[in-house]
Length: 159
Image (cartoon, rainbow, N blue to C red; front, side, top):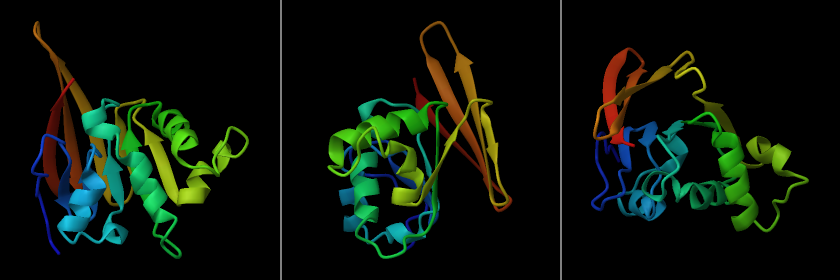
């Protein structure tokens, strides 16, 4: 089912940018994807803007659901610089088979690749993600300029 730019009905901030890109992973995202008949095996990229619950909390459920799929496709999870460490800590809490000894295998266990936006830019053959932070007196806004297969997209979140 095509759900391009379909936003979740609650205040999750989660949305499908297109069939292959999920922006944010707030609480209830996995349920929302199932309700909308989104084939999670088509998702190739997950972009997380920050580690507040409304942007990040369903990542553990999402990764655990991948264990039920035989030979799941590779997913690239793009986020703040310490995305790998944050997800690893979360998975130790939620996955009984994950502990400090085997957390180094997290990418292989769930067939994911973690990319921290240390330089505020990630680029591979299909996608380019640039994080741009704008500071004002009242708040800090993060914009994500996403180019996917030549199509320019822009998403923003508030600090």
